Image 1 (cartoon, helix red, strand yellow):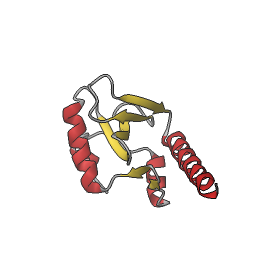
Image 2 (image 1 turned 45 degrees about the vertical axis):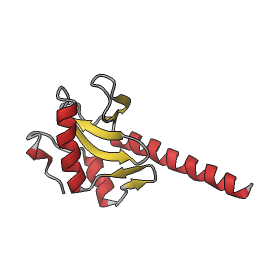
Image 3 (image 1 turned 90 degrees about the vertical axis):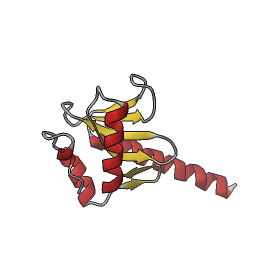
Image 4 (image 1 turned 30 degrees about the vertical axis):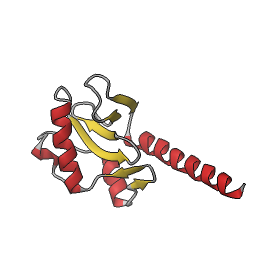
Length: 122
C-alpha cells in the first residue's frame, strides 16, 4: 500500500477505505482506485496544482479528470475534484463519507449498464 505519510505525516485513511480494499471493491466501471504508482504521481501533482489544499486521492474517473479524494483535517469526507481546473473551480461534489461516494459510483454503474442493455435490446 502507498505510504501517504510521505506527504502528510498525520493523515490516517478512514476505515471504510481499508474495508473496500479488503473486499477488493476497487473498480466501479467509470471509477477505479489508483495503484501505488499513480497515487504517488497524482498526490504530488495535486500538491503542485492545488497548494492550498491537502488532498489525498484514492480513485479516478476513467472518462474525465475527476478524482475522488480525502482531505487532511476534513475527517472522512470525500471530495470529487476536477483535476487540472483552476484553483477554486476544482470542486465537483462532496460526500460525508466513502460509503456515500461508493453508493453514487455503483448507482452510476448500474444506470449505465441498464442503458446499455436497453440499447442492445432495441
